Length: 464
Ligand code: ARG
Image (cartoon, rainbow, N blue to C red; front, side, top):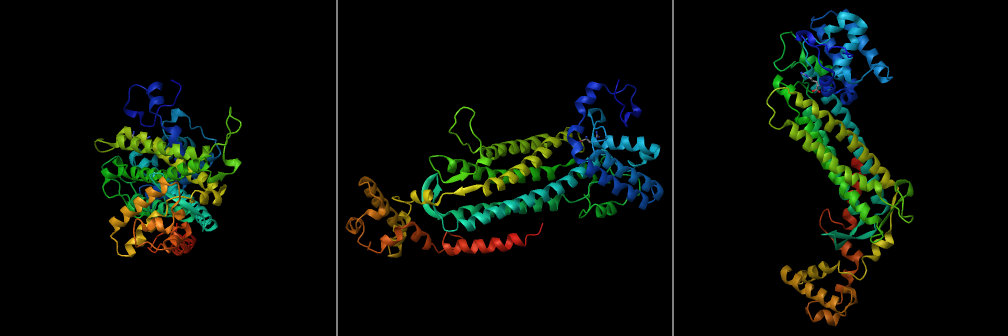
């Protein structure tokens, strides 16, 4: 038996087999929150002194040792291999090694069940802040591009069929709005998770006169998780966080997909700098939008993390069950992957240029402004349904005669409705159609300008 026996092995006659320890060890993943674990222990030990459960001198010595352990880990000087079981045990073992039996007092009035929930909540607070910063950065890049390509016209699509002309800036700003809601969702998620679970102990609380509110204040929580069983047994904060990551990734995957399409020779609307694209090992002519594809692909991975945590938690009886240790993989994966994708996306976008001419070519000789004819007729008293039908017939006529709408003669139009006059042609130019939009939030130059002004101000003053 090469490994040291666990700190909890008192009631066991036989040592834990190496096979079982290897199987149940989680330190490979949970070592990522050693800082949170130590911060939690420091606050706990200070509270134990404040409530006279241990002396201040004892607390001081434990705290000093914990801080030096944090340094050892940061410098890779502490062995955190599988036989340490988990990060909580590894740190406590090291503490006892450093200061002797006094180290054993740290775990008074505490269990790993409330400790691990605390570490996760602390870790998520940090992760949320990072993701919010990255969202803000991406919003700024989008806004910058929206200003740069303010009046670039493009075909707006529905069903991936050309629908109506829009501004590219309008399209880009749609993502700024989506990301804003993601930012808020993270904020909401933080609000709900920012409660202290520590002090619940294993599940029933403790007979020591601990001060949970004091620990909550020390660690920047907005209060405590009231019910001790709830505190150690739920992972809804994790589910909510990964669900939020899933929505972020859905948004990124849609834009990723558009960049993939727009970089194709068929669309040729966008070009990403060589530094952010890759070649093919066999086809020398290829320049592939791999980064955008990977973002699109990694969205699936995050949805997997969500299903993973939901399935782990489903139907688990209260309170703590060891199944819950499996929450680390989706947690760390969702944080790292979402962070990476938000980060790379800003870079991809900075290094992408859009081709104004190509966009506009696709607006020529087309039927994107057909709705204008219908609206024109409506303004002359025709019902919308009838106007829609008349316009449909005009479109069919134009297609049959291999013409664009603006190439039709007035006389041809009159055949479909006497109400059509020369001035209808003015509306058929894509830029005219855009200028005629009046509704709030539309793609009209005025409304898009308003959005730009709004976001310039909002992103500048954003509170984190
Ligand atoms: N490594 C464990 C986890 O992540 C810590 C809690 C263990 N608690 C227990 N009673 N075995 O869930």
